[in-house]
Length: 475
Image: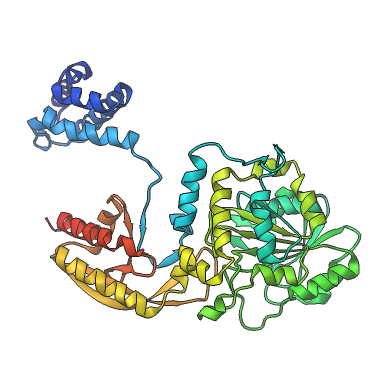
């Protein structure tokens, strides 16, 4: 296309003022703020302008691209992109239960209702109703945390990285913290123990080797500059084979002999022994407290199944000191997190209620027979809704996710879908474009829908979404 032809096409682009006078655009102005409509029109016209500049031949540009009938859907799409929420509900069909990219643990129904109730108006966030004076936001969850864990004191910050940072800064700024080389973990999002320790002002003192650390290694590293002994649970990986590690109980005894506090970063953290449900053994919060750890830190939105939070429990003297650290204000949690966390923790007063009401625990402990029934039901729904695809029930393995139980395979039932007229990647992409988006995975050139992470009330939505996506890619 010559430059003269390109210029002629550019001159055909409608003017914004002319478009605003059209009845179809006036309808948009009645539904949306004028600033949003104007921006949508400008964005739509810019897309048309770029199409003209990128066209190689005049045949690539049809005359109707300049018509309002062609441009209106473009404007509507650009308007919607401005006012539609970017953070949206998604359906997790991947089989990864604690999926970090999809928001980790979903909240239970009671926690959701509490969020609405507390956020609808004012609350007693920092107000003592019994005394009529200012209170502490930690009081809303501290009592139940102590009841569940057996700790002397507790507090909550915005995430576990913040909990570790705050505890180290309070207890060991300018002093040495002794930790095994085999426990210098890194998790997703570039959280690395050495980096967090450096930011806290504490000085890292590594002992032992990657695969073997002995009590004498800690003993020999302890000196006048030592402020803390740190044990980090390697929740997202395992070192196997010729290995040796010091138990928390042994570290506590060493700390008592030298007058040093011991901190245990559990990472995921859980209040229920999951081994009784057929999963691998994961250290519980209660076990860490019983072993004598002075400070225990863990996440609220992993195995606990609550909102994002960093929980700090331990001996009252140390926790009280951590609470008054000025850094704590930058890490404190808001009323919505407290409301969701408190409601989640209340469920743990009964283990059976926790398994039933907390979605993460419910999914992790779901029986294979229950998942098979769900898969069979979804297959029937899909058979009624869809054509142009081969659909089969298959046995697969789910994952715990969230950096927890890395060696744990969870047997599951899934559906495999093989489109007949389009590549499977096109189906996967189309599912992501739905509302709500359905996030699945591809294996062996088939789309896999894992029933472990698809909620019961999402089955019809998934069936309708898959049908819609197949129709689009097969047309």
